[in-house]
Image (tube, rainbow, N blue to C red):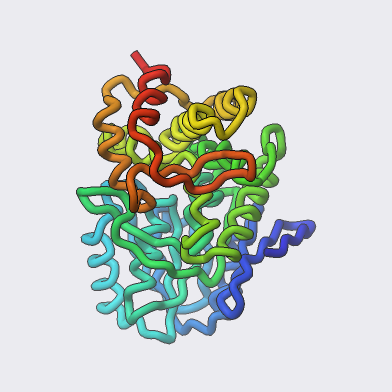
Length: 345
């Protein structure tokens, strides 16, 4: 991973040999799209966008525009099927490319469609939410949900470029800021450092840079990359338990507090480090209490569905050597920590 500061924007390179790609961060970087399409050599593109047409940059080539909706309700195989059929009707070929414009769910589903159509077309991501800019658009993980769980059908498919235009964030509602800050808060515990108080662009760049380092070292989630799931095991369970009324970043924030307390209960970190988890989450004005209706037994059952849980309950937890995947965590300890957490009334 290399990072470059310019007068206009920041560039971070995800270094994966001949599949390396740049992540551009800053105001107006969406206007680099035509240049990136030309570098790929694509003759035509399909732009799948959850944002209004008048906010989209020029592509420089004949373009199919497809509307998308951000949100978990469309993050499924039916959406991928509709996209691929539209690509085929347009005559998109292996000489072409696909562009996603939207939040994390749009990025995930469009990325999977790009990975599957013609066994893989180049894709460029223009993430338009804070969550997507700091997490979903970088790293090549694409997936959609099944009724049985989140992200159960997916593929690794690295983009050709990522354009994180901070202008897109200007119109975000408050809850979408919360959604993104949940991922930034957990970055504090996976090696990004304390990002509180930094300008937003620097917080995005630091989060992306840390993720780029981890992905470059472990692209396919066989070891180190597990730490990116800090706070996610409970977070995903909370999303499911609330039928996605709780947003992803909100669940991750609560999951981060839980991860600190579970690590403390297992004797992995000091009480001061446990307290720091809550302090960081609260500093971003993020939720930290469990939802009132989410029972301990239900949450444990949902956490058993986590993809990391190949032998009992597994969590990414802080420890003497930093965050790492811990398998075989006793259910009794998990239950005690959940029972002790504050709940919404």
